[in-house]
Amino acid sequence: MPDPATLYDEDFYLWTLKMADALRTGRFTDLDMEHLAEEIADMGKNNARELESRITQILEHLLKLKLAKGLILEYNQSAWQASILRQRDEVDSLFQQSPSLRFRIDANLIQKCYRHAAARVATEYKVEPPAECPFSQEEIL
Image (cartoon, rainbow, N blue to C red; front, top):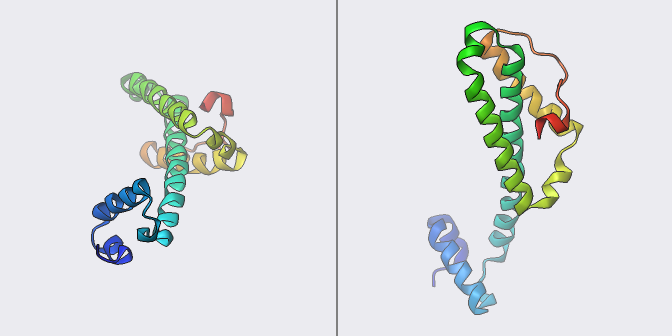
């Protein structure tokens, strides 16, 4: 087998197959421990980023529902509401897979996600969203 560290850089997919096989068969000396540890840590970070992204999307559509008027609201309201429901379902799925992600949600995270959502809404609709998030954690989730 090629050096695992080299394989990691040259063919990541093949590296994952080789590492999984080595783990399953107990060939621990064949493991690329440094990269394995890095990839496992990244898996957790990916879940955290996904949670932030979904909360940002929820906040963006809650803001649009709050700030849009007239025909824009009339034409888009159902789609925004459906998107909020989809994102909430996905957040629930993340919580089922990784319950500890619930503890990442605090006022700082919500405000960070809100800033991103507010900037998008402000740019797209030329409105001035509130500086602070007007939605409670319960309304978001």
